[in-house]
Length: 177
Image (cartoon, rainbow, N blue to C red; front, side, top):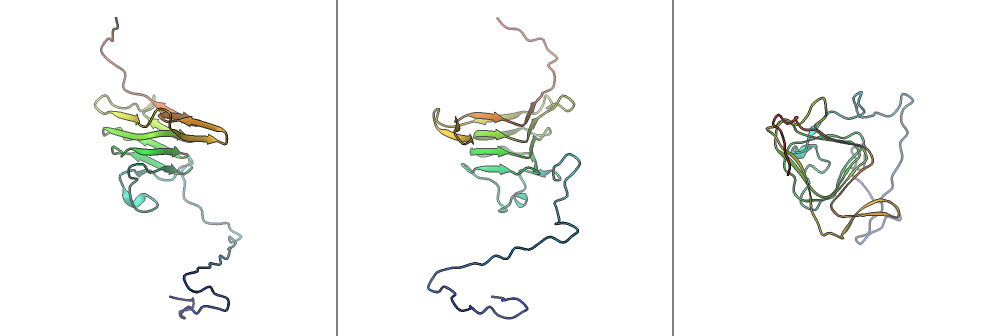
């Protein structure tokens, strides 16, 4: 183990032994010019990344069944796959469905604090492709805690941000009985 300056680490007096662990963290101040920040665009988001790109996820792996997924405020993700059944998805940044593919977001519930986009008026989902949100779970299971004291049951999309779902206009006449 490197102790800094190329010398081996030597435990100091009072260092726990026998399987114990102690860690000291030293805060660092930012330079007068400011701390480095991620390069976000004019829209407030990082450059778009694909959900299917495992390397773009914090742990280098795609979310798996029953994972809780949080997209942070500056995150900008293009959903380009059919997801496994996730527990809950917390969208604080932006999640956009790919308009060139059939995509499905499978989850027990969604919390949208940021932006969820399944087509817009300016750029609707094309007729040839399908974008779906499929909600799963037991009817009375509590999976969403919005704020302290506000619990929502399963199979809910709670939108406190923006949600846009626009498809291509129909060209045939629809009828009902």
